[in-house]
Length: 212
Ligand SMILES: Nc1ncnc2c1ncn2[C@@H]1O[C@H](COP(=O)(O)OP(=O)(O)OP(=O)(O)O)[C@@H](O)[C@H]1O
Ligand SMILES: O=P(O)(O)OC[C@H]1O[C@H](OP(=O)(O)OP(=O)(O)O)[C@H](O)[C@@H]1O
Image 1 (cartoon, rainbow, N blue to C red):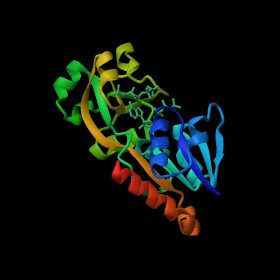
Image 2 (tube, rainbow, N blue to C red):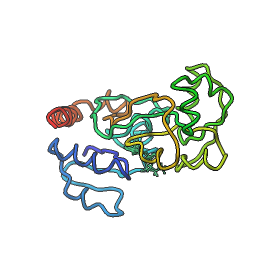
Image 3 (cartoon, helix red, strand yellow):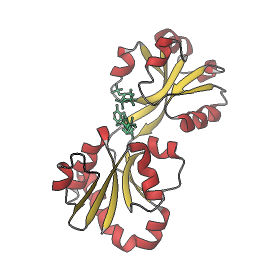
């Protein structure tokens, strides 16, 4: 039995599509409903909150997982990345009110001392520290685009895909920081101890994403 952790929410359909193209059994997975553990043939799928997926493989509850590299980096957990699927593409970006984006024009030094709202606090700290820009963080769990409009923060650090959420809330990208996509990952000990059982599946997924 091989256990695979998958994120619930918006990424799940892309994950199921990748697995189906790789020839893994997905009929029950597509009908999961509120069932969070699905067994099909020799696979067990764990449907986990996206931010918890890295922990599922790190602590050995799952052998493999698909997760965005944003969530993986935010978890700050050591994992083995086996493949960038190229699916679920978006970017991490700093964004602020239109006037601020215009004033700073891609230069982040102007953000020194400002308050940044994000649910990715670890990643934001790392990113701003690399730029040598000290900021204050406001941790929110979602809808971070609200914060500048309410005066709770000056700008945000979040995932941007189409840009429509930013636009609808009067915000613009100041600087894109990191490309994001769904990664195939394994726990370090799974790779060491169970590689013989894993490599066929990893190969099939690699073939499937290459052919798509
Ligand atoms: N607009 C988007 N387009 C594509 N992928 C996205 C988008 N927003 C978030 N993601 C990706 O989806 C994954 C889960 O993100 P997020 O935690 O925001 O999901 P969620 O479904 O809102 O989960 P939850 O509400 O349980 O935290 C992340 O890897 C992220 O990169
Ligand atoms: O550029 P866009 O295509 O508009 O996508 C970006 C939005 O998608 C995500 O939010 P999500 O829907 O996951 O809700 P959340 O704010 O609760 O995380 C992200 O946090 C942005 O708000």
